[in-house]
Structures are given as structure tokens and as C-alpha cells.
Image (tube, rainbow, N blue to C red; front, side, top):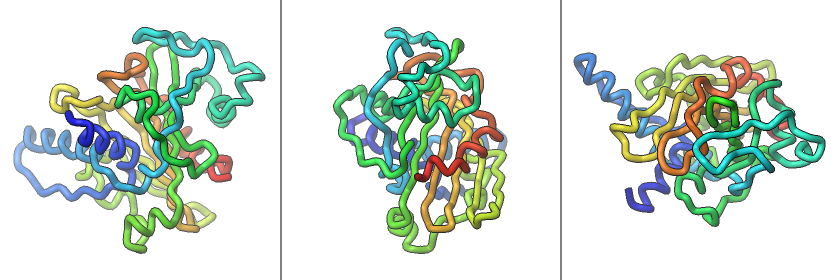
Length: 258
């Protein structure tokens, strides 16, 4: 994979929540599953330009969080000092027992480039966070796209219902809910990609949430079991770091928008 293709992959992975992929029909179970795998990979590799504007923070780890090998050692609850960091403050928004939270950059991990340029953040907690547990390392990513970026992507039409094309676009278990404040909440699952089919960092099972705000902004939160390939910080988690209910609650936390 050349550098340009790899960069497109990373941008697509971070921004695929607003990608719209049309998939033609097919016949036969093998064709269906093969096509679903290609669609999921395409959704991971499509650069949308919406959420990609908020790609990841610097490659920064808290003290004593991750080992130098493929495993991870999980520290105890954050200390008072750790709560003053961005990762520490974000950890306070998560359910107890989520895991050890550290701020990272998936872009830099994928590219193995510690000094890769990072875009400007929009939301106060925008970025990527490693979630270390005894069984492995997963990730939670938060990205807020301003209305100007959403309008530029959609031609001013706004985003469509996130479940409109599910499951043919690769999303499974997709549900939407109109909130009392006028926002539209979508929650779905993205199945893992097959590392044998795609010679790039292969993403594990992932739960995704998208919140279309009434003012035109779009907030996404992703909870992934991790990825396989160069740059990974540990084995895949057995389950995503957040449940669907926990993810839906987190994305509605107003602290992510301040």
C-alpha cells in the first residue's frame, strides 16, 4: 500500500459514519458475504471529508499505561493528577470499569509516523483514546463536524437518516431515535474486516453512534475492539469498550459539545 492510499484509508476509517455507499444486488450466499466484506472495507477506506477534519490527537500515553510489547498492563483508577489531562477528564465521562484511558492518534499509529501533522480539533474531546483492559486494547474515537463542513459535504442538504441504506451499506442492527431536543440519534454495528482479504490495518468489531444536531453539526463516537496489523497497541478486545446503551448515553453528553 502506497502512502497516498494509506492516508485515504485512515481518513475513511475515521470518517465513514457519513459515507454513503450504494451496493448493487447479488446472488448466492458466498457473493453476499464477499460483497458485504468489500462494502465494509470500502466504508473504512472512503475519505468523506466530514469527520476527517477532526482526525485524532497527538500520540500521547499516560504514565504506566501501555507496555512496549503487544500486551497492555492496566493501571488502577486514574489518580487526581491524571484527571487533569484530557484523557483523564474524558475517562470521567465513561462508565466505571471501562478500562485505562489514554489519548492517542490512530493516524500516527497506522502510519507509524509520530510527527504526522494533525488537524485542528472542533470539539473539546475530539480525538482517539486507547482503552486498555487485561484482554487487549480497544479504541474510542470522538469527532464533531461543524455545520459548514457538513453543508460542504452534502451540498447544503444535510445528512440522511443513517439507517436509510442499512444493512446493504455494511451497517447492521442500525436504529434511529428522534430526541426531544430535535436531534437524530443513530446507533449501529460495523462488523470486523477480514485481514486476509485486505492487506491494511484490519478493524475489529465496532459499535458506532452518530448524532445529527438540530443546529447542523454532526457528532460521532466509535467504540472499537481494536485493529490488527502494524501499529496495534495490543490484541483485540473480546467486546467493544462500550455497550450500545453506554455508547448512546455517552454521545448525548453535552460535555462533548462545549
